[in-house]
Length: 139
Image 1 (cartoon, rainbow, N blue to C red):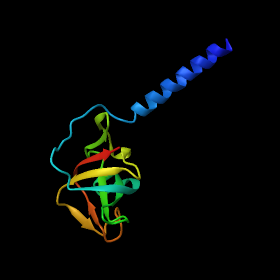
Image 2 (image 1 turned 180 degrees about the horizontal axis):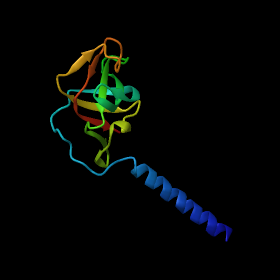
Image 3 (image 1 turned 45 degrees about the vertical axis):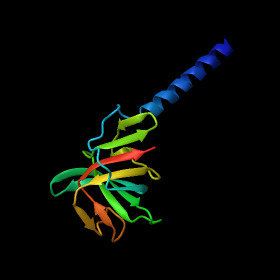
């Protein structure tokens, strides 16, 4: 009886681990853009921001990046909830969200021309990109 319980507990834990790791990725997806990214960087800091603004409630992720050859945060991203975010792994490309971006991630970024310098969402005096077209997290 004890060995049966140990076996069932082991199977349950393995299954739980498999479910939890696969649930962090969305369904297989196709990228919105197939062009080369505007830049590739490493994530140095991620903060969630939620408040009531002049146009009403909003939420976003403020991300600090290290774009080579720099070794310190030298750019920022304001990632809206509607920004297309994907994760690329050895298994393929999957849908994700801004909350999937973590410190240490390598990201590819596509953006439009809207950029602010000295915005509080990014490193002091650095460019902070808004209205992002697509982000791909490489893992």
